[in-house]
Image (cartoon, rainbow, N blue to C red; front, top):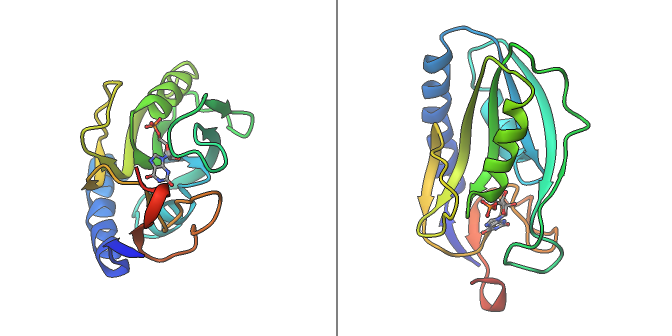
Length: 173
Ligand code: XMP
Protein backbone atom coordinates (compact mmCIF):
# COMPACT_ATOMS: atom_id res chain seq x y z
CA UNK A 1 0.00 0.00 0.00
CA UNK A 2 1.23 3.50 -0.85
CA UNK A 3 1.93 5.63 2.25
CA UNK A 4 0.47 9.11 1.84
CA UNK A 5 1.25 10.44 5.34
CA UNK A 6 3.70 8.63 7.60
CA UNK A 7 3.01 7.87 11.26
CA UNK A 8 5.73 10.35 12.29
CA UNK A 9 4.33 13.12 10.11
CA UNK A 10 0.86 12.59 11.62
CA UNK A 11 2.19 12.80 15.17
CA UNK A 12 4.20 15.95 14.45
CA UNK A 13 1.25 17.69 12.85
CA UNK A 14 -1.07 16.73 15.72
CA UNK A 15 1.38 18.35 18.13
CA UNK A 16 1.07 21.60 16.20
CA UNK A 17 -2.74 21.40 15.86
CA UNK A 18 -3.10 20.68 19.58
CA UNK A 19 -1.07 23.81 20.35
CA UNK A 20 -3.32 25.87 18.04
CA UNK A 21 -6.43 24.51 19.76
CA UNK A 22 -5.02 25.07 23.25
CA UNK A 23 -4.11 28.67 22.31
CA UNK A 24 -7.56 29.31 20.83
CA UNK A 25 -9.54 28.31 23.93
CA UNK A 26 -7.13 29.85 26.45
CA UNK A 27 -8.06 27.57 29.35
CA UNK A 28 -11.82 27.59 28.73
CA UNK A 29 -13.58 24.22 29.09
CA UNK A 30 -14.33 22.39 25.84
CA UNK A 31 -16.58 19.48 24.91
CA UNK A 32 -14.98 17.42 22.17
CA UNK A 33 -17.59 15.81 19.92
CA UNK A 34 -16.05 13.10 17.73
CA UNK A 35 -17.81 11.79 14.63
CA UNK A 36 -17.72 8.00 14.86
CA UNK A 37 -16.06 5.81 13.78
CA UNK A 38 -13.23 7.28 11.75
CA UNK A 39 -12.34 9.94 14.34
CA UNK A 40 -11.36 7.63 17.19
CA UNK A 41 -7.61 7.41 16.63
CA UNK A 42 -7.29 11.13 15.91
CA UNK A 43 -9.40 12.03 18.96
CA UNK A 44 -7.34 9.73 21.19
CA UNK A 45 -4.03 11.26 20.07
CA UNK A 46 -5.27 14.85 20.04
CA UNK A 47 -6.95 15.02 23.45
CA UNK A 48 -3.82 13.85 25.26
CA UNK A 49 -2.00 16.91 23.94
CA UNK A 50 -4.65 19.50 24.85
CA UNK A 51 -3.83 21.65 27.83
CA UNK A 52 -7.50 22.42 28.53
CA UNK A 53 -10.34 21.07 30.69
CA UNK A 54 -12.11 18.73 28.23
CA UNK A 55 -15.13 16.46 28.16
CA UNK A 56 -15.51 13.86 25.43
CA UNK A 57 -18.67 12.90 23.55
CA UNK A 58 -19.47 11.14 20.29
CA UNK A 59 -22.02 11.31 17.52
CA UNK A 60 -22.45 8.70 14.84
CA UNK A 61 -22.65 9.80 11.24
CA UNK A 62 -21.94 7.69 8.23
CA UNK A 63 -22.45 8.27 4.57
CA UNK A 64 -20.20 5.48 3.32
CA UNK A 65 -21.80 2.05 3.61
CA UNK A 66 -19.98 -1.25 3.17
CA UNK A 67 -17.69 -1.29 0.17
CA UNK A 68 -19.04 1.91 -1.42
CA UNK A 69 -16.45 4.65 -1.85
CA UNK A 70 -18.90 7.32 -2.96
CA UNK A 71 -21.39 8.80 -0.51
CA UNK A 72 -24.72 7.10 0.05
CA UNK A 73 -27.45 8.55 2.24
CA UNK A 74 -26.35 10.16 5.48
CA UNK A 75 -27.28 8.43 8.74
CA UNK A 76 -26.81 10.47 11.94
CA UNK A 77 -27.34 9.22 15.48
CA UNK A 78 -27.08 11.89 18.16
CA UNK A 79 -28.52 9.95 21.13
CA UNK A 80 -25.12 9.64 22.80
CA UNK A 81 -24.66 13.40 23.13
CA UNK A 82 -24.79 15.06 26.57
CA UNK A 83 -26.46 18.45 27.17
CA UNK A 84 -24.32 20.94 25.23
CA UNK A 85 -26.10 24.12 26.28
CA UNK A 86 -23.58 26.87 27.02
CA UNK A 87 -20.59 24.64 26.23
CA UNK A 88 -17.76 25.31 23.80
CA UNK A 89 -18.02 22.43 21.33
CA UNK A 90 -15.11 21.24 19.23
CA UNK A 91 -16.40 18.88 16.54
CA UNK A 92 -13.75 16.45 15.31
CA UNK A 93 -13.82 14.37 12.15
CA UNK A 94 -11.24 12.34 10.29
CA UNK A 95 -11.80 13.80 6.84
CA UNK A 96 -13.67 16.62 5.13
CA UNK A 97 -14.73 15.35 1.73
CA UNK A 98 -17.89 16.88 0.22
CA UNK A 99 -18.66 18.61 3.54
CA UNK A 100 -22.16 17.16 3.76
CA UNK A 101 -21.59 15.21 6.97
CA UNK A 102 -19.96 17.99 8.94
CA UNK A 103 -22.33 20.74 7.84
CA UNK A 104 -25.29 18.57 8.83
CA UNK A 105 -23.75 17.75 12.21
CA UNK A 106 -22.79 21.41 12.84
CA UNK A 107 -26.41 22.41 12.23
CA UNK A 108 -27.59 19.76 14.67
CA UNK A 109 -25.10 20.91 17.31
CA UNK A 110 -26.07 24.58 16.85
CA UNK A 111 -29.68 23.64 17.62
CA UNK A 112 -28.50 22.44 21.05
CA UNK A 113 -27.56 26.03 22.03
CA UNK A 114 -23.85 25.62 22.71
CA UNK A 115 -21.70 28.69 23.49
CA UNK A 116 -19.62 28.01 20.36
CA UNK A 117 -19.02 25.35 17.72
CA UNK A 118 -15.64 24.92 16.05
CA UNK A 119 -14.50 22.19 13.68
CA UNK A 120 -11.22 20.26 13.52
CA UNK A 121 -10.43 17.74 10.78
CA UNK A 122 -7.36 15.60 10.34
CA UNK A 123 -7.59 15.81 6.55
CA UNK A 124 -9.32 17.90 3.93
CA UNK A 125 -9.65 16.50 0.41
CA UNK A 126 -8.92 19.12 -2.21
CA UNK A 127 -11.40 19.69 -5.02
CA UNK A 128 -14.24 17.65 -3.50
CA UNK A 129 -16.18 20.08 -1.34
CA UNK A 130 -19.81 20.68 -2.29
CA UNK A 131 -21.10 22.33 0.87
CA UNK A 132 -19.42 25.46 2.23
CA UNK A 133 -17.71 24.75 5.53
CA UNK A 134 -14.40 26.20 6.66
CA UNK A 135 -12.78 24.05 9.38
CA UNK A 136 -11.15 26.02 12.19
CA UNK A 137 -8.31 23.49 12.42
CA UNK A 138 -7.00 21.29 9.59
CA UNK A 139 -4.25 18.69 9.87
CA UNK A 140 -3.47 17.98 6.22
CA UNK A 141 -4.81 18.93 2.81
CA UNK A 142 -4.72 15.84 0.61
CA UNK A 143 -5.36 15.02 -3.06
CA UNK A 144 -8.63 13.39 -4.15
CA UNK A 145 -7.76 9.78 -3.37
CA UNK A 146 -9.53 7.25 -1.17
CA UNK A 147 -7.42 6.95 1.96
CA UNK A 148 -7.35 4.38 4.77
CA UNK A 149 -5.57 3.96 8.09
CA UNK A 150 -5.30 6.01 11.29
CA UNK A 151 -9.03 5.46 11.92
CA UNK A 152 -10.19 5.44 8.31
CA UNK A 153 -11.51 2.25 6.79
CA UNK A 154 -12.32 0.42 3.62
CA UNK A 155 -15.18 -1.96 4.40
CA UNK A 156 -14.35 -1.51 8.13
CA UNK A 157 -10.76 -2.70 7.73
CA UNK A 158 -7.42 -0.86 8.01
CA UNK A 159 -8.50 1.51 10.82
CA UNK A 160 -5.59 0.30 12.96
CA UNK A 161 -2.81 1.31 10.56
CA UNK A 162 -0.57 3.97 12.18
CA UNK A 163 -0.17 5.81 8.84
CA UNK A 164 -2.51 7.13 6.14
CA UNK A 165 -2.33 5.04 2.98
CA UNK A 166 -3.91 4.78 -0.44
CA UNK A 167 -5.28 1.40 -1.45
CA UNK A 168 -4.25 0.13 -4.86
CA UNK A 169 -6.95 -0.85 -7.34
CA UNK A 170 -10.70 -0.23 -7.52
CA UNK A 171 -11.13 1.07 -3.94
CA UNK A 172 -9.33 4.29 -4.90
CA UNK A 173 -11.43 6.77 -6.83
P1 XMP B 1 -18.46 14.15 3.47
O1 XMP B 1 -18.54 13.92 1.97
O2 XMP B 1 -19.80 14.21 4.07
O3 XMP B 1 -17.75 12.82 3.96
O4 XMP B 1 -17.57 15.33 3.80
C1 XMP B 1 -17.09 12.72 5.14
C2 XMP B 1 -17.04 11.28 5.56
O5 XMP B 1 -16.84 10.42 4.45
C3 XMP B 1 -15.92 9.42 4.74
N1 XMP B 1 -14.79 9.53 3.81
C4 XMP B 1 -13.77 8.67 3.72
N2 XMP B 1 -13.49 7.56 4.43
N3 XMP B 1 -11.52 7.26 3.17
C5 XMP B 1 -12.35 6.86 4.14
O6 XMP B 1 -12.08 5.85 4.77
C6 XMP B 1 -11.72 8.35 2.41
O7 XMP B 1 -10.91 8.69 1.55
C7 XMP B 1 -12.92 9.10 2.70
N4 XMP B 1 -13.45 10.23 2.18
C8 XMP B 1 -14.59 10.46 2.89
C9 XMP B 1 -15.48 9.67 6.17
O8 XMP B 1 -16.23 8.82 7.00
C10 XMP B 1 -15.85 11.08 6.46
O9 XMP B 1 -16.22 11.30 7.80
